[in-house]
Amino acid sequence: MANTILAILEQREGKLKKSAFETASVAAKLGKQMNLTVQAVAIGNDISNLEEVSNYGVSSVTHFKNDNLLNYSSSAYTKIVTEFSNEISADYLITANTSFGKDLAPRLCIKLNAGCLIDCIKLDVQNNEVIATRPIYAGKALMDAKLNSNIQLFTIRPNVFKPVEEKVEFNLTTKEVENPDTRTIVTEFKKAEGKLDVAEADIIVSGGRGLKSAEDFKLVEELADALGAAVGASRAVVDAGWRPHREQVGQTGKTVSPSLYIACGISGAIQHLAGMSSSKYIVAINKDKDAPIFGIADYGITGDVFEILPKLTEAIKTLT
Amino acid sequence: MKIAVCISHVPDTAAKINIASSGKEIDPNGVTYIINPYDEFAVEEALKTKETLGGDSQVVAISVGNDANKETIRKALAMGVDSGVLLKTELQLDSFGIAKALSEEIKSQGCELVFMGKQSVDFDNQIVAQMTSALLDYSCVSVVVNFKLDGENITCDREIEGGKEVVATKLPCIISAQKGLNEPRYASLKGIMAAKKKTIEEKPAVETENQTEVIGLKKPQAKAPGRILGTDSSAVPELVKLLREEAKVI
Image (cartoon, rainbow over all chains, first blue to last red):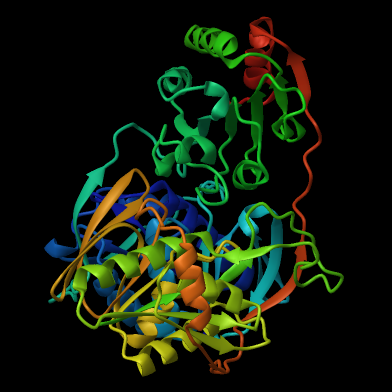
């Protein structure tokens, strides 16, 4: 009998997240490379876009349903996925390295006696073994590693594995969950003010000390608005209280890999560079031409952010 | 109540990371080691909780590693932690090995409330807290920015993409601390002096086999230096054109 890979899909507020399709697509690809049966599991109440998974090569989906599971519950989810994984004898499990995946995966590892590799940016198959590449030291180095355990779990970094379209038949099994173990449960979600989260954004406009004050950050916000981008910040301005910690990019903040990262008035301390240097395109705007940020920027302007940012925002707004 | 705080000893975030000749670990030469930054929030929250609970509450710091980790344990003792335990190993344990060692010690100490940093800034896994809790069958809330204990009941804010989840759970519990949870106190001179007299108990860490096999480490590919387009806003049209036509990102 073929081995099985189980994709764990994340839903939020009744909708699968983009990272769920990345997970499904990677599971489908590994399934082909290693001749595995591919299954997916989602937990929640109603999930409106579950069928979309079948656009990415995954046909067999099991939906565990309960009114009390609209929000994440680490205790209930661990139990449900552990039991389901045992039932289908999954050999490989895969999920996205989001807040959800990061919290759930290690619990499953213990309950399933599985090894895990976290935050993978590349998964290769060699001699029927999965070789994973993952950043360590916030991206200052990369590690290639494999697992020696019988059951293996991988979490993949969001935004790195682009989902590959492949339409297949959709076979849904819905199972009602009786008395979920809600010892630990999310009772409320407090949405952050502001729009996009840096961890999920495709474009980030980030500001540093060069902005001079919290008020002047509006120049960054205006450019971000024009681009539909998230606002990011350097550690210095977060520690100064100008911006909330959730916007911090770098080693004690978030590690990001957007398509475009625009660094405004950021010199590029090693901790900051570690957190954003894997961005596809980097633009730096800074008065100091010797700032380390120019060492990794694709395009730079060595000038005054106060003069350049309003003009750049204006130019972006006129684009069609 | 006896509260545990688990701490790790990691390279300073300002350190340049070079790969050792073995190709499987980093070169420790010239690297300064510090207490893991997230663990400082865990220590602070443990101390605050002890102060709130009063009575005979105690905080014990637990670290897995070799003699070098004592420096980091001393730092926690200087901040006000009551005692320290070093679970000694010369091996490079993976997260599972560390969770296993910690869980055994937490069990034998009888700690029902445990704090640790959300991740160590070396391997960045962010999994030890959850693994330890699963081994002990404790509840666990990770990436916590607000913590409240009321009798047996715990309410936390957990930071996630785009906001915060309010999580309800009960003791026994492990909390993994995120920046923003509190402002860690500085060690006072008195604290530093007192730390010298506090004991660090040493015992061997439980041995486990690593599930992870490191094939090799490498430095990320260095980016080729880019183009400087100008020194003022006259470069903006060219920048927009390049982003649109060459990079195709806007």
